[in-house]
Length: 328
Image 1 (cartoon, rainbow, N blue to C red):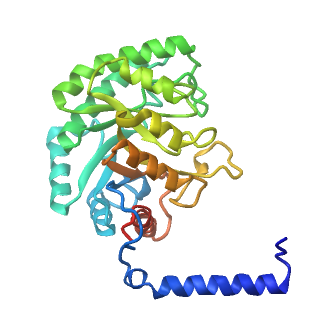
Image 2 (image 1 turned 60 degrees about the horizontal axis):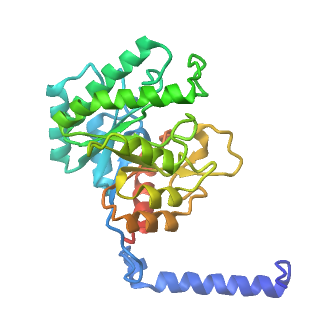
């Protein structure tokens, strides 16, 4: 039996660790920061969500684009809200200017995301909020078109929103009916704009809680403009992303690569961690994506930009993704 307190065992472990470290450092690929030829390389594109940057408090949008590009990201996912450059305050002219800036920097807009589906849920019992939610969804479709991306993340509804005391729970069947009606109304707008409505899986809204439910929802529209935005972290509390990926298959159009820890979580956003600092089985997840034939963006989503040296999070994430994808 292995005894970790044994001096011999400790010496053996130290020797093995030293040997392994020396072997790694002696590797030409490791020494030069190049890809290890023995590692599998994945075809996915690297992206990062704007929430990982201190925008707009400490950085301008162009500074964020340039930092993401310098760190080695292929794309950046932008977030639509009510107050920033990415809001109803802007129109086609402003969004096309952002697109031109991204083109000049040399980085793609990988998708458009928004928290506005929570204060204005498409399934709310408040008809005025449902109407406002549809108005905002229409504006998001237009913004995505003008920004040059065909990926729009959509949260179609919620039975429950635990952090909002103003949200009255909606019966499951009513939620399903309203969500399907809302997405059906948005499809003609999406078709005209050339934008895909990517339905995101959310574990705490009590809706579309299994792969089967998500598949039935997406397939019910029989439209190429309704796909899945799969979030690896949103189901980690009770399920496993690698299981979902295999079942969703080619329905997956875009991805949030979100780290999650099951260690002492309090069901808050603090459970989401910097990439590789969690309990996700990333080798299994990457293999599952690869087996489906997915070749799109893997977008790191994180809600806590660093207070000091915020660029460190961006560079660290890019480095982690390079290693995960076999690029280092």
